Amino acid sequence: VHGTSVETGWQIVAGGFAALAILDAGYFGKGIYFSTSCLYITPYFGTADAPCVLICLVGPGNPYPVTEDPRMPNSHKGGPITPRYQSHYVVTTKTGLPFTEKDYENNLSQYDEIILEQEAQVVPIFLLEIDTSNVSSILAEYERETPPPRAETRTTNRPNDNEEDNRFHLWVDQ
Image 1: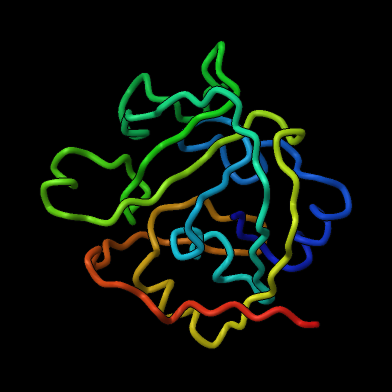
Image 2: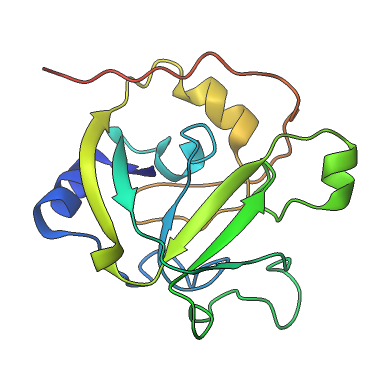
């Protein structure tokens, strides 16, 4: 899944993804970012006036497993996809940092980020417009340091990782 605004979502559907560093240099490398969790990507679309989620088919090829903290020197932050690989894959916590052994011992929830090198590796198949009535409460739990996109803002916080969240609902206009 990929979160954005409805306007940008329709531009992606019409013209494809652009592997440009529009938002930032890329926490885990330069590329197009996806996750398998709608809750995890809420900070990337939740403050848009008209948020949406794109459900996409992705072909990651041979993914490089990123485990380095992007705040450390020599991390993948802002760098290209690792040579001989076509994508990066990182298991994260709710905070957006790589999942560690300590996180496992503390029974924290796992999320992921998939970073694709080329827009040819992704096909959007559904655009889901998000009902914003529950988004603010989800943002309060999932907000973290993320780059501010053109029309959205992002912040940092560490929520309780052990609670299941049933407040996230998607509606599609028919």
